Image 1 (cartoon, rainbow, N blue to C red):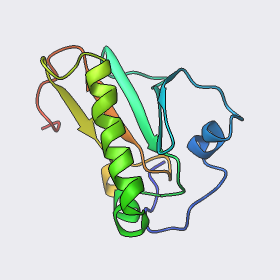
Image 2: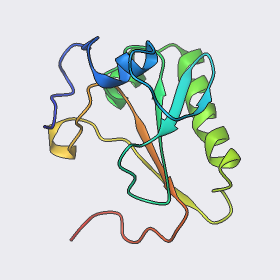
Image 3: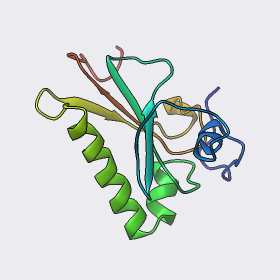
Image 4: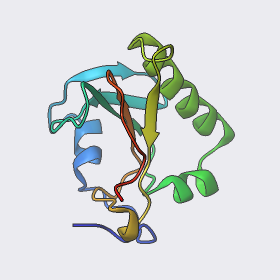
Length: 125
């Protein structure tokens, strides 16, 4: 069910629980700023979710409240994950849904990293 990205952070969301180690994940990468893991329902041969370690509901929330170090660390982590997965030369897509109209389902900022095949048009027509 899509969420309202303006609501306060919910510590019980699935990504917060993954960060705390309460729910397992197939980890790809972790540093002080980000955790990345394989999506449990992949939409492409490579489908990795990258989440910041701080309590941010959406990209809007993150860009407004995160420190410069958190923002830089998160963006650098996304780039490193794409490079490590060998996706830069063939190409890849990043997607971050914000709010109900976009279909955001988990109230924790997350970036989908898709690759491994030609992805086609951005939006369904």
